[in-house]
Amino acid sequence: MFITLEGPEGSGKTSHIPPLMDYLRAQGRVVFATREPGGTSIGEQIRGVIHDLKNTEMHPRTETLLYQAARAQIVEQVIQPRLKAGEIVICDRYADSTIAYQGYGHQQNLDEVRALVKYATGGLVPDLTLLLDVDVEVGLKRKRNDADWNRMDAQTIDFYHRVRAGYVEMLKHEPNRWHAVDAGADWQSVQDELRAAISSRLPAVHLI
Image 1 (cartoon, rainbow, N blue to C red):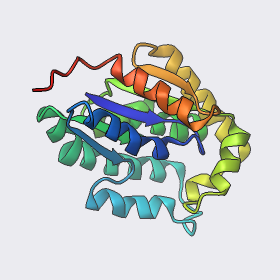
Image 2 (image 1 turned 90 degrees about the vertical axis):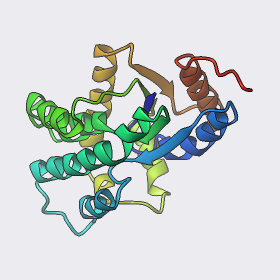
Image 3 (image 1 turned 45 degrees about the vertical axis):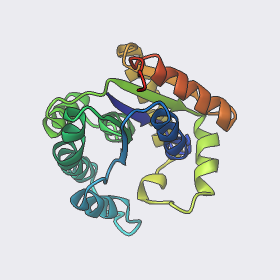
C-alpha cells in the first residue's frame, strides 16, 4: 500500500509519520517511510537546490522540473521496488504537492503540470492520501517556529491560500483516495484519526 501525507505549510505531516510507523509495525506490518523531495542521494541534492533561500531567481518552471526529476528517481529507486516487495510505503509529500504548489500556487497551466507529474511518476498514484488541513495563518505561524525554514516557506500569503484551495479542489475530485484531517486539532486527535483512516484501508494481519 502506498500512503502519502499532504498539506499546507505547518500542517504537522512530518511529526506524525514516526508514530504511524510504530503503530503499523506493532501489527506485524513492514513499513518504510520516505520524503519528497529527497529520499535518494540524487533527490536530496535536488532538494538542497530547490530549498536554498539564495535561489530567489528560480523560475516556477525550473522549480517544477526539479521536483519531477527528484520524484522520478525516488519512484524508480525506492517506492516501486518496496511496493513490489509487499511493503507499506509512507511518503511525506508526493505528486499532489506539485499540483498544489507549482500548479495552483504558482498558477501554472494545470494540464501541463499534471502531464509532467504523470511522466515523472510513471503513472504511480497513491492508494491513500491523507490531507492534514490547517488554516493558512495558523500553519505559517507554526512553520516560523521551525528551524527548517526554506525557500518554499518564503512565498506570499496569497500563494499559500491558493495552495490550500488547490488541495481542497483535489479532494473534491478524488474523494475515494483522499481523507481530510483537521490538523488544527490537538496532536493526539490528529494521530488517532490518521491511524483510523489507514487501518480502514488495510487488510487484517494474522500474527503467528
